[in-house]
Image 1 (spheres, rainbow, N blue to C red):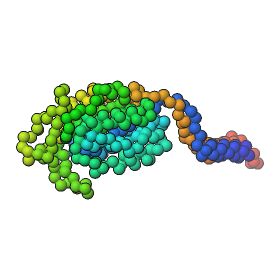
Image 2 (cartoon, one colour):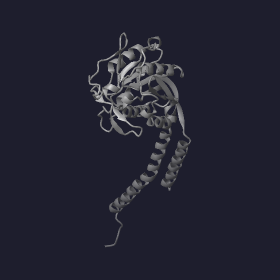
Image 3 (cartoon, helix red, strand yellow):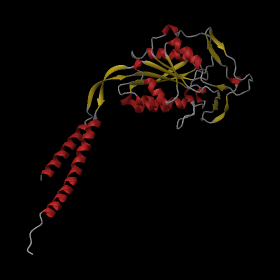
Image 4 (cartoon, rainbow, N blue to C red):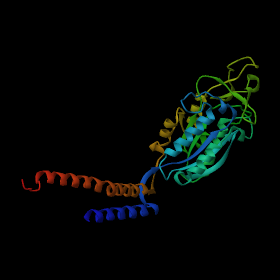
Length: 319
């Protein structure tokens, strides 16, 4: 009888814990959070397949998207993420920074649908794009950090440089270098994303950023009909990072990217409503397990005890 009363009490408490769980309980906790505007380069050189990590996409753009999605998922609740695109010399804002836990599905869907075919021109001026990213971040709420992801490949049509140094240090964040150091051909894709060939030297007017301005760089292959070879323009991006006050990092893996984004230098303490449903669900589960299993073990002990008593105290019988 006592066991039945105890089981009823345990199941009642388990039910109450589950009801509390369904009420979405939360407590206020102070934690480090982050607010980012992510700008992704979608020019055609980002289609170059020069990543070779197991179970990860090989092309620069897809690798960036996977790394971005996983790194945002790893950020603590209360953090905010916005998404923008770079092409030609402009930045297009897709989503203003949203709280990642409440809006992760929308953010992740926007990342999944980023495509090189969204580019509005084939030209690429990374310096102007970075400048546009800084201005976009400055137009958002204070404390927005910029993460600009690009391979640094440029096709420059103008010689007027943006005043990056004027805004140096006004926005914190990272300039992320995407791609490999070994030159690889840039795929030529049609509008159905099918490979039709590779870009050649005669179709790509490459420029690099030198200390005196934009200057033509030496071609990797002097043959204008030869296949153009693209690699991460790390020195250019490092120079742009120094000019803008951003930190340069090379994208190597989603895990490494996640660690970069959680740098304490960019963290902002914030009181966040923290979901504790897991706590009540765990309590309810343990109470149910106790109510179901302990009586069975007790019953076995009772039966064993009864058998032992019978053996120790045999009933008397006439001989």
